Length: 117
Image (cartoon, rainbow, N blue to C red; front, top):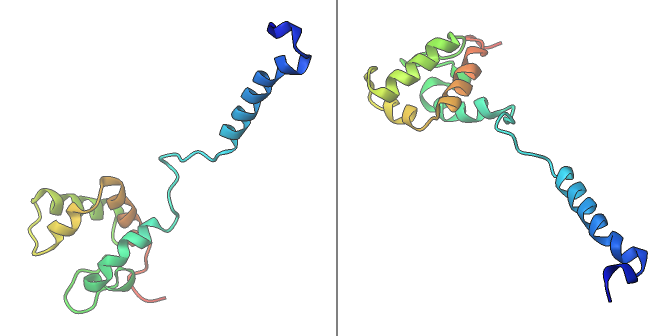
């Protein structure tokens, strides 16, 4: 018995199955590299609060990060990471950030007010 001798529905099911599979795949949201948590910078910067204060407003001898230039913060993190800026612990912290994460942290701190609102 060949495919033509079956009912017309028997010939259509492979097409229907492919259509359903295609719709299922297209309905799944794609994860793109540029999909970033809008709070990622804040979340990454939370660990900095122990020394640099809440939102980068340090008290007691540590540098204030709030309101600093974004590019200067990125350059400082790079310097700590590659050893050109000497510090007691910052080189270890900076090595824990990817370049993208360092940029998120720098962006977050650059948008903070150096004084409490």
